[in-house]
Amino acid sequence: MQDSLSALVERAKSELPNITSRPDFESLKATLVGPKGELTGLMKQMGTVSKEERPAMGKLINETKNALQGLLDATLSGFEAAELAAQLGPAIDPTLPSPDSIAGTRHPLTLVREELNAILKKVGFTVVEGPEVETEYYCFDALNTPATHPARDPQDTFYFPTDAKFSNIDKKVENEKYLLRTHTSSVQIRTMLKGEPPIRIVSPGRVYRRDTVDATHSANFHQMEGLYVDKNVTVKDLKALLDYILKSLLGSDTKVRFRPHYFGYTEPSFEVDLSAKHLSKVNKEWVEIMGCGMVDPAVFDDIGYDSSVWSGYAFGMGIERIAMMMYGIDDIRYFYQNDLRFLRQFG
Ligand code: DAH
Image 1 (cartoon, rainbow, N blue to C red):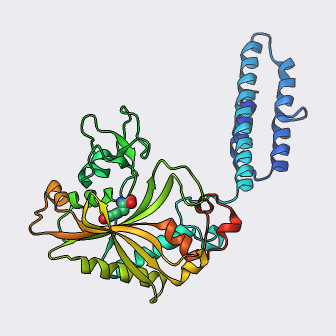
Image 2 (cartoon, rainbow, N blue to C red):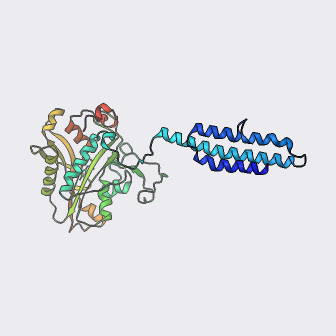
């Protein structure tokens, strides 16, 4: 009987791996442990075992029963896993780019950003990105924006609590606060501190301001910053580049004009207005589109560039504003609502 019991376990071990369907599984299970199965048959032979041997034999039968049950359970959970996998479909790799037909269309802000990147790459600019969480140094101090400047007011800027910690951005100095960057100009400083002139970069990205949300304001929007540092850079170079960018984007009949303005990090500084055929869509002749100027020598001195050698220009524009004008969108909130009826209009 002992031999028969271990033969039964061996049989289960050799046959179960070959079972591929539930009906086959059920019938093998019935043969092994069912009411009319082999184990039951062997248990019935207990009557023929001597009284002395009975306890040991009972123990052996129990062990055999448990071993068989274990083998059957393992096979069954294999079936269940396969059935679940079949329901879930083939394994997906979320890191693969999805085919466009499935992913849908590109967001209008992505379209404008990529087009601007492409236009600027043609004339030697490199695209770089900076962190959205910044320190006061990169966002304000290094940009010659003193602690008393209204842009630094908590009414206008989102600050983190003083004990907040971020490991992915450079160390802050004592008492300095982390904040959500209010402009992409912070990337100018990061780029200059990391490299050497000549520098030609653009940096698109998300920025944050404490604004009440309405048709033209959002507490979170996108900008594109540009910085060019070299020898003998002039306002004429700046004007030529902006003409090139805006005409490439909006057509050769686009007009660009400079108005004097003040920014702490450029001198002289300008606001730029443009007039383009797209503006008829929003019923305007001119719109203000960006800020720009010649990098203030104080900024160069502060980060350690010799301002008697190096000169440069910088500009920063709002991507939403350009997209609104190009596509005739009259409410900034459409960009963030993810309404498919809106998104599907951009191919
Ligand atoms: N940072 C400015 C803003 O957010 C835009 C700007 C103005 C960027 C002048 C510049 C600049 O690089 O030189 O409104």
